[in-house]
Image (cartoon, rainbow, N blue to C red; front, top):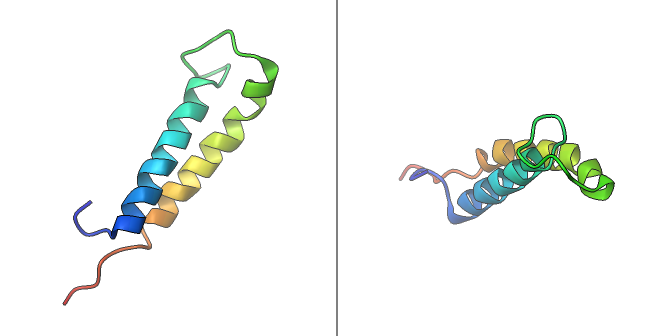
Length: 65
């Protein structure tokens, strides 16, 4: 993570956090089994958004001087 800008690091950790939360509340894959339907419906979009943010964070790298 030394080669990424501060904005890239923030996007990476935010995406990682959203991915983990989506993974935890997923009824099939997750750790927590008794989840309300409203939370379960947001688990797959959270996983997808987390992965997208992690991929986008690779764009924000420091330039070599």
